[in-house]
Length: 351
Image (cartoon, rainbow, N blue to C red; front, side):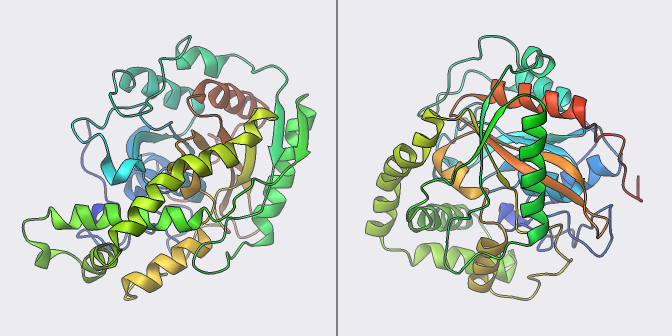
């Protein structure tokens, strides 16, 4: 163990700028954010301070820092790594995981930390160690790809650079022998069920703090937003989770994996939401980061895979999602991609 790494206060953010330890900067460009909430972990791994770092993901907090810093980041299935004794942390949105430079390190991390979870819907153990999956090509897969983002409180903002990265990933999949088709998920009104779960989980976390007056102003604002939600709206969101899962995961009846962007562009500038209130921050995050949180809501495993460097000199990545409980296929595919297009030797200026 090396030490404690910076993150957004109580994981309530995606820029690692609202923290008692001030702003964390991206090793690729000090005027850019490593994203969050596990931004300190991403900056430490990308800069070479550590080879691997723990991270959590309640709405993209593994995948967003991975994409921003050129790392590999896998959000496991809900329940893959135990959150005991809190079996419904953030109302089941959050999972534990890690950030690493390569696929094999993440696979080993999962082998060491997973198993024994008593969370509702926890997946069974894999048929073989995750390390073995990461070392073995996946065979011919049916691959869907899409850049359609679910709409939240406001229209998403998606730069063409990440759409091109998805197209590049689709062509790479074809060259590896996979069957690739453009197919959009049936998002429906998923945002109406995600937001109440997220905000209520945040408010419950804030309410447990013995001295809430010591929290950041924006963190307290997140708590107020959650407390204002009617119980009926929250209960309807929980019930809607199963309906959303049945509708959207129907895609995996025909496809093994889905490729989407991770976020709306490359790493955001530092202080993007500094000084802004909770509501403006939530709306801003939902517009630029619309692609990750649906898979927390549904519980599927999803990973951020490096896909080269953009014209602005910052890392590009794509998100690849699998069926619930099927990290093995994702790790196998990620290992194949890494062998074809190695990324670990691409180091930021500060490393």
